[in-house]
Image 1 (cartoon, rainbow, N blue to C red):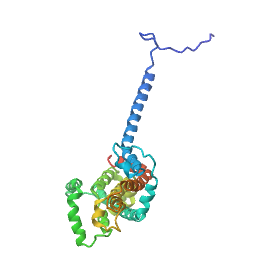
Image 2: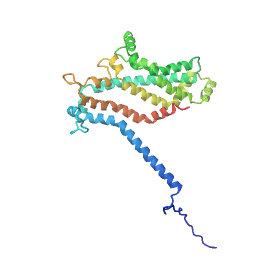
Image 3: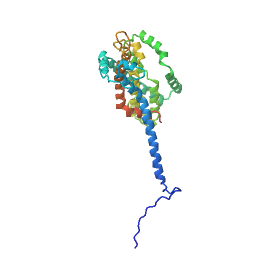
Image 4: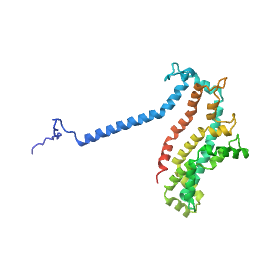
Length: 302
């Protein structure tokens, strides 16, 4: 019995005399290059989107002279941290934030439920003219807000709902076309056997919606709530038109109440207040981002 010695095959030399790399090594190199390019692009895009927010933070730390200087002062000579304290105390910041929170939570909750109900009807119920109605609903998304602004104000003024929260209640109960589309796409992808089994057990369509379909749609519920909350928190036109100064929202207060004795806006305080105004939205998204991303990704797939 002879002992055998294990030998390792060496790559054949190339025309230059260097050993030829194996195909697996070439594949790994290509993967690393692609990842490097992808990460570079992602970091660049992230910096592009974070740039305006970073500039807003820096603006809140500058003096008024530095904001008006030419050429631009990219960094403040001395960070004016007191701008944030002044912006918080100069107006009833918490009171305006409370008004925004009440309106946003009220509208987001109602419109999420009503849009889910309408989306369920378009996805699972059969009725004559359903496709036509759905097309009209989608077409209504192309109407700019300015077109309906005056009629909306006149209707609420006739009903005595100006300077109340009732307009946001009615808007929430009337559903939102884009959110209806999200729910319709999600509900259309659920298996038909779910509701067939429920119908055999004697459940009605309302029971099927509340007990089966709505609990299954938590990703879209999360996405819908965040979208609706962001809409209302950032809305400037409707609160400016329908609410008085005491009941208005933080978005309106930030743009209209930071003025000096001559009525001129104070930009450094507006910038500092805008940073604090954006923080709640960022926190909500960071907490619920998994559900938001899942809802946006699953609502378009059947």
